[in-house]
Length: 107
Image (cartoon, rainbow, N blue to C red; front, side):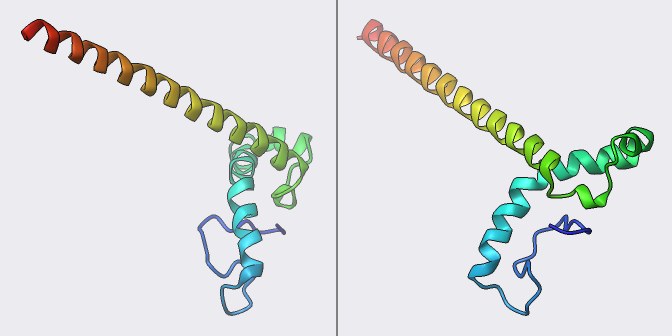
């Protein structure tokens, strides 16, 4: 991703003057690496001594550590969304059963 991280979304990610199919991969990479790059940014700005010790610089954006951090972030995000979906489904079924019970009682 280079030395400077683009923090806001730009359609023309490769700055060739127009949004083309080659920008699509860059959109995915921009989104995928965002959590890891943000973690590195916080590390460099808030914990500079620790970042220096681990030799983390702006060159680390889009690198191996950022990719690994982002991978685990997205896996956890998917797991959380699946858990929320399962809970929502169970609660929906429970509410439906309760409504049916109350309707049968009222009849």
